[in-house]
Amino acid sequence: MPKILVIEDEAAIRRVLVKILTEENEAYEVAEAEDGLKGIEAIKETDFDLVLCDIKMPKMDGVEVLEATKKIKPEVPFVMISGHGDLDTAVNTMRLGAFDYISKPPDLNRLLNTVRNALDRKELVVENKKLKRKVSKNYEMIGDSTGIVQIKDIIEKVAPTDARVLITGPNGTGKELVAHWLHQKSARNQGPMVEVNCAAIPSELIESELFGHIKGAFTGANKDRAGKFEAANKGTIFLDEIGDMSLSAQAKVLRALQENKIQRVGNDKDIKVDVRVVAATNKDLQKEIEAGKFREDLYHRLAVILIKVPALNDRRDDIPLLIEFFSGKIATEQGTAKKTFSKKAISLLQDYDWTGNIRELRNVVERLIILGGQEVSESDVKLFASK
Image 1 (cartoon, rainbow, N blue to C red):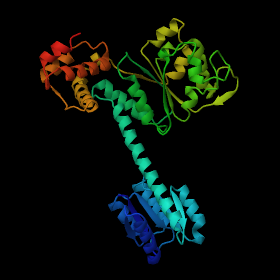
Image 2 (image 1 turned 120 degrees about the vertical axis):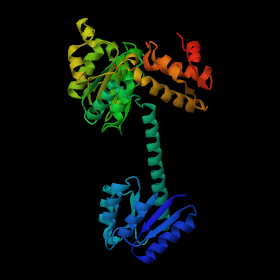
Image 3 (image 1 turned 30 degrees about the vertical axis):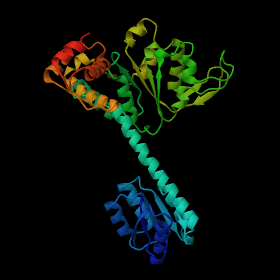
Image 4 (image 1 turned 135 degrees about the vertical axis):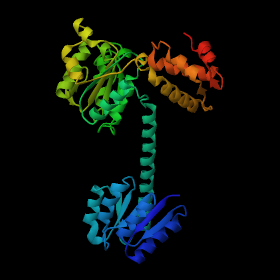
C-alpha cells in the first residue's frame, strides 16, 4: 500500500487533501504533518512513497523541506502545493527535484492524476535500482589475492575520471568484469555501456559496426544506420579484443579519440561523440606493433591506464572464494539447493592447471554440481573434473 505524507499548515486544506486521497483510493495510506519540521521528522521515521508539501509554512517552508529530504531520501517524489502567489516558487522547486506542483484549491482530477504519475515514477526508480544491483552482482569481482586487490584499487582511482583504460590478460580471466566496474563506478554510469567484440566482426564490417553507415554506402546498406560510437554517446564503449581490429578501423578509432568526432561509412559529415573508451586484448600489443599489425599511436592513446588481469594459475588463493561464488550463483540459476565442496575437493581444484582461467573453473564447478554428490568430494573432482 503506497504511503503518502501531506505537509500543510492550513488544517482545512490538509483535511481536504486527506479526504480526496483516502476516499478516491482506499489503497493509499495517508499521514499528516502540520508544518515543515514535523514533516521532516515523519520522513526520517517512515519510508513514504510520495510527499505532498505546501510551500508557505511557518518554522520551515516547503522549499527547505524539499532540499532537506533530497539529502536524506533523494528517491522520494515531492508534489508541491502552491497558492496563487507561490507559482513562480513552485516552478523553481521542480528545478530542485520536485515532481510537480498543484494549485490551491486543489482540483480533484488534477490532484489524483499527479499523485498516480508520481507514484508510478517512484516505482520505476525503485525498479531501476533493483536492476542495477542485479547488473552489479552479474559483474562482481571475486577475490582478495594481491593482484585482484590492486586491480580494485586502480578501478576506484580511475573510474571517476574519463581516462582511457587498456585491459590486458589471457582469455577467460575476466577482463570484461573490469570494464563493467569501470563504467558502473564512473560518472557515466547513467549512460550506456556498449560492448564490441572486435574479433567476432568481419574486417569488412567493423567500420560500419563502429561508426555506422549511410544508405547505399555498400551492398546491403539499405538504410542509414548509427554505429556503436553513437550508441555509446555520454557513456562507455568497450572495445574487446581490440588487437584483432583492422588497421583501417584503427585509423578511424584514433581520429575519434583525438577529435571526439566520427564519420559514418559513405559520408564525410562529422558527428560529435562524447564517449569514454575502454579496450581489452589478450595479445601482446607491443609485439603486434613490431609486426606492423597495430598502430603505435593508437596504443599510446588507449593505454593511458594499463590494467593487467592475472591468470587464474597466478591467483590460486582465490579459487575457494570463486568456487563458493559460482556454486551459489549456479544453484540460484537452476533453482536447486546450494552444494558444498569438501576441503580435499577444493585443494585438488587449486592444484589444477587452469589454462581456460575463470571461465573454465566456472564450467567445472557447474559440472561437479550437476554430477557430484550433495557434498562434492575429492573422488567427484577426480572423476568429473579431469581433462
